[in-house]
Length: 396
Image (tube, helix red, strand yellow):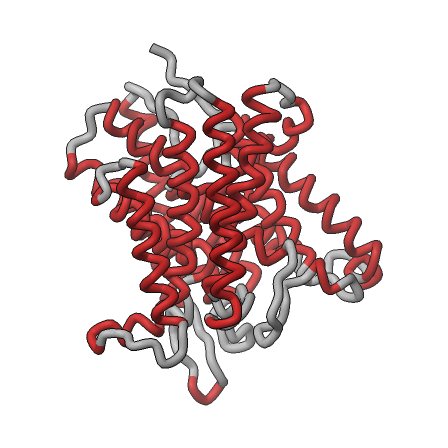
């Protein structure tokens, strides 16, 4: 029996990755309007840029119910399932920490040039996490295994060659934060644990979401009587914000799957829209008491508004793509949707090789800088599509 596929999920993922590539590149462009940048940490507000990373967390959540169902269909044991989850989480954490440290390197003290170090990191990631074709040929399997081993050896070497900090206080690699991929890894792990504990049922996931939100709000509200044994969580509220976004994605997928993927589409759209409106209302109510709107602060209102935007945007794409069959507009997003990790690491790989000053300064400012970022992002999607066709498809 052929598995049903919701194309709008792939397109939403592709759109999100495209925007992640775009806003990351645009961050290096000067003299552009403030709404094209992340807002400052002390500013109560957000721009569309502040919604891009949450949108990816949301789509990670949307994929979880389908992925779990697929593994159950394949007959995975509990051990095999949790091994996959933990290995995937560990891979995201490792790659996230390496990427963070790449930006924090003391380039004068490091034992090899930054460009060579960073390029080696991303090439090693491709060697390790590429989805090699299944084959019965022993020789090819040995080659594929050998490539993965080479990738791990490169990571170990890079770890020992790394230096950061002031010249008189040099240190090796440390996780100052987990990086975007690492934060995704933690949100994925926490969300999938809650999803399994909730027996993968919508009627249980809704109160689970509410409980996580209430704990999050309690940790953020000043002078709120939090139990003494929960004070340690105050330093980890960012994980609550990210997990809420991922859980919101799970809720939307469960609404989509209820009664069969093709049944009652209007009711499914109505349920997701109502979820988005409810999240918006809660965000509006808690905003004055929980630190306002701040991506950098990871406030509840920011998390809820972003989840609401995704819960309202996805039904529109679902209606357009899966119900009306209007899909040609999204063809350029396919590489990013099908191969998101490769698409995400291609820009830093390019800059590691070419350097950040590969073009005159005028292409990094104003309207020219904006146009260059758009073209660069489209070229990254083209390169990802080409590499995907050549058999390079990363999978954690």
